[in-house]
Image (cartoon, rainbow, N blue to C red; front, top):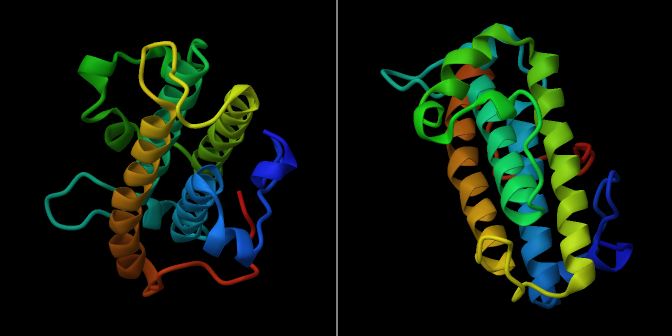
Length: 190
């Protein structure tokens, strides 16, 4: 994707309020996805290992697990489904059927906060690159190699972030009381 879509591969996205308020379908979808990614990153930022392991009640969901889960989702959606590329480690050793429900939650505690964040950020950057390549060939109506529309794929990712950012919001509030709908203006884009 070129800068006309708001970001270039490997760089933080840029957009202005006019595009945010009045953008076309592609701009609206990309800005919404990026806003969700940035809010998710903010909810997981500056949390130590104990905070990333914190659970609420009987739930196995943790901030660390969310970082690992969302990294896997990014890899599955943008590398496997969209770009038809093999997934990278550590995801290449996983079985979607048997590992999906618990892998991220049961293994995140073994990783450092920096490793968890780096895994997620790396997959996000690779996802942006794959999406840029696809959008250079056409709009959201194009289909992925498995027949899903690019529109459906992007909307699914927005939904995935919206749901899990809600989980992250509750966990982060429990860790240190930080709340809010979106990050401060100076929060860096992953």
